[in-house]
Image (tube, rainbow, N blue to C red; front, side, top):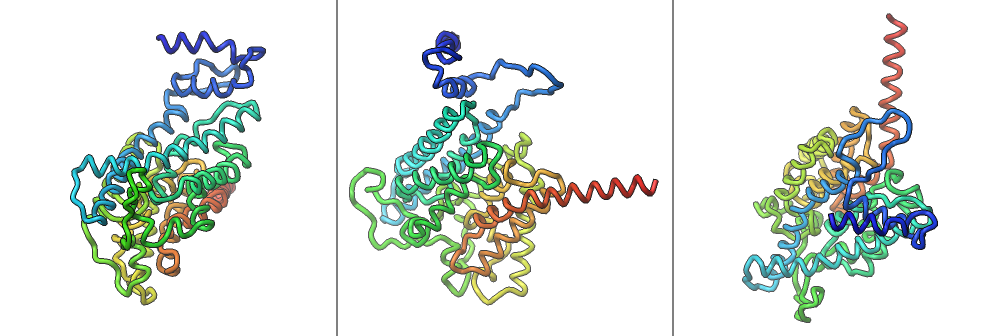
Length: 387
């Protein structure tokens, strides 16, 4: 009650003609984050429930927490493994926490800062869309990514992939993936190679004893450079392998997927179709693909290496950039899975194909929905003519 009374007390200052009216959207943003808005529709027929966009975003963030927490532990685990040191669980987690937290803060500070500024400039309410995007960004990059590069990439993605199209709900490309794509194409050495997957003490501010000569290639990186695919290891499921912060643990990702499916926030049709499309195409390449390690990799192993599972669960199901018709969701998801495996197999220089596959299908999602709708219109018209 004390917080509610405080907000009510200062509210007149942020309303029209108040001395802090210029920051009205900032006040409304914090108020709606803390409490359910008490405004109602003035006209028309409206049906409301308690699950507004803010709570949907918060639920997705909760679903991402297992991947984040395990990713922090894995960052510390990979560091001490490369250093040849045996440490306790909390020491490894604390090390990873100090490595990942600054990147999470930069993602939110830069992204929300831009959204707050745009909202003030346009005299609009602050949207909750970046609540999820800001959480995903640190999970799909290496923990060694320099903060200044991350800040530039986030600013580019928020401005040119979101705000320029009208803000939350108007973007047709996944903002988090645009951030990763910017880093990949503008600063490729930051997100590829062997050295970027292990954090040294200097990055965490714990000293300067950097790990020299460490080889920590990802499973996909090894498959793209070797004649044979890496042998399956149960650590590929647990997530104790080099990779982006939130993409390594299938168990953690599965926990998030179960929550999203149970609450109905993510589409099971899209999610399932991604795995089906990827598995069938990988199986096809197993039978008649090119002579390389990626084509020879068992179809199910593609699920547990790289960002395939994370992309299928948390980014292919993005309700803004994905297909919205029920039939379109099957097509959209299937093509993402198929395209991701095709890029992996056919382009050894870019073994991780999930990012490009999702961004490509983001562009085709409206066309898929259009074709599905027109097909339904024609079917109904034919039924009327034939009745």
